[in-house]
Length: 147
Image 1: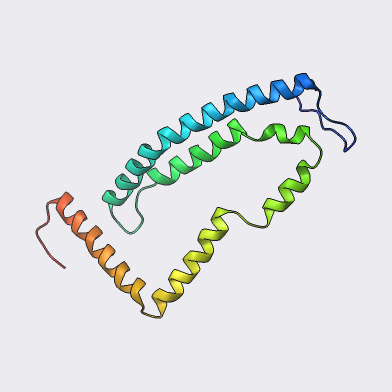
Image 2: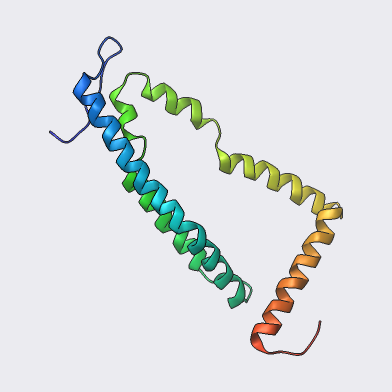
């Protein structure tokens, strides 16, 4: 197909016009990505707050719906798609496959959960945060009862 990116062998490289095209398309994609990120900052905070204020055992799906939209938009933008035009792109993907930010957050989360289970500082912080959120729920519902 004509619209598929050309893959290059290690001895071959994109020509000058392919490079110019890729640089221009990358700049356009950066604009789309930046604009999306600029919108997502306040919208994600709002969706998170709406989810929290709705209360209940399982807060509303607003925030996670927004994350799914963000994932779809990330795939559509495909910011680094032109990397496949150069040899070695598969090796780059292998290098990053070993870890990402989510994995780092997971490690930190595991540490915090272990500290919480031991009854350390994080357990007290969680109790205070839960109390503050419950107080917000009571205020938004107009309850005057205290726990």
